[in-house]
Image (tube, rainbow, N blue to C red; front, side, top):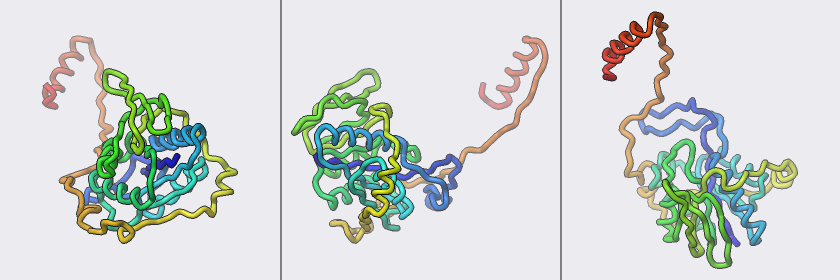
Length: 262
């Protein structure tokens, strides 16, 4: 079975600056890590490969520093990796991001199953996986909490709905996004790190795509425009009050009125 896992490099800290002009995160020079949800996607792929055979490829999008997450995936057991990297991809919203990744998938070949993490910790939209499937014109299931059965022509999964668990059977090729807890992610292997340190990573740019119209990618291809974005203000002001319960309740009421909470 040919399995593709989409992974992403995300900031490893919450102290990230925002570009005041474009409204996107400044990722250069900050500590980064693999998106935690993608670890569960990788482990799901490895479990399926162990039972059905085949290979696991990974795909990421970002600057050259994102090569590190592909190398990390190699140390966990991924067979091949591809990075989509071009300055023209920068500043993409979920629509442009999903379209870019879908174009990358088409260049990589055919897959029975594509697995994504439920969401990323820097965007938290939980939309890119499903939108990718729409661009690729394949069925998809989101919020997968468990794998029921992996068949020769279809996969059966349990989907975590707000008030119920729904069992869904979908035919290949298809895409699923998995939630935390579906499997316990394995740790990177030092032996695999040594054996894969020289393994090739293919890099694709806009010129490699079938559709290389710049208007479809990055900020140019993003209908969602951020008007204003800013980091939360830190307020450590505090007051200490003493008195009887009656006095304190009155002061609290007065303070809440001053702050226009009531």
